[in-house]
Image (cartoon, rainbow, N blue to C red; front, top):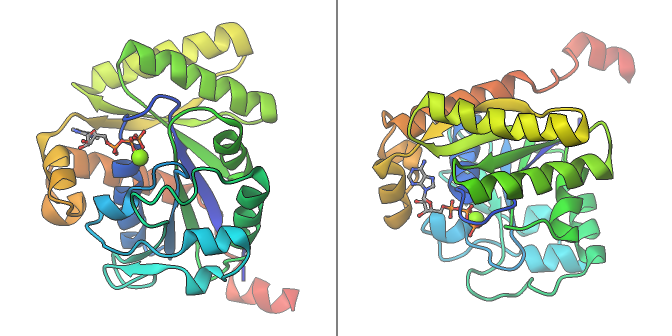
Length: 266
Ligand SMILES: Nc1ncnc2c1ncn2[C@@H]1O[C@H](COP(=O)(O)OP(=O)(O)OP(=O)(O)O)[C@@H](O)[C@H]1O
Ligand SMILES: [Mg+2]
């Protein structure tokens, strides 16, 4: 079996919509046929389970201690990974603060456990706000990092900090940029252009644009009702945009070896 593709979702600035995007991408990628695990890597303030309206988000602390296998620590969502639109969640109990003081060693142990979870095609890491060492270690260890920014000027400076630190960890690495809560596609593009221009000026390279997700009251409503946006409002502009982003990510997924090639590798 192939190792899962790990996609980290970060932002620098808090509250840009990382968790909403991560949960909705998990759902949309599962619809594309991927077996998806959503891992709540916001170690200070896990809340993916709250977004999903679940009492139990799984036992991430035990995986980080090395006391439990991923398979024994997940919670199935919408039927679980492998079911159409279903995926698995690995999180800590919401509100417990159980992982607030996790060490880099714990985080490394988690990454090793996730890399070995080859029953998944994709693992989405919902990162915490900020650019602390552990958050950037997750972003750098992932196969790709999606940077969720907004048109807010402070989101631009924080997005640049995230981009710079990722690029500093590995000079070949740049994030894929998603602009959330944009008022129009033009505003999303302009926001991305400002980040790309700053990166070009100071880093001599620019990140790629993944797409824009509009400001949409339906997105806020789904979060407040702790329901999946894509189930509740499949036709909402934010849902359609996130599905487009999921298709773009899915199309970049390296193809699994064909059965013939796999047989020849045995
Ligand atoms: N496209 C959107 N349209 C309208 N509201 C949105 C959109 N995306 C996110 N929001 C709202 O923004 C708020 C923050 O979203 P979310 O919790 O996903 O952000 P976050 O980046 O994960 O935050 P944190 O940094 O605290 O982890 C939520 O109330 C959510 O409803
Ligand atoms: Mg969050």
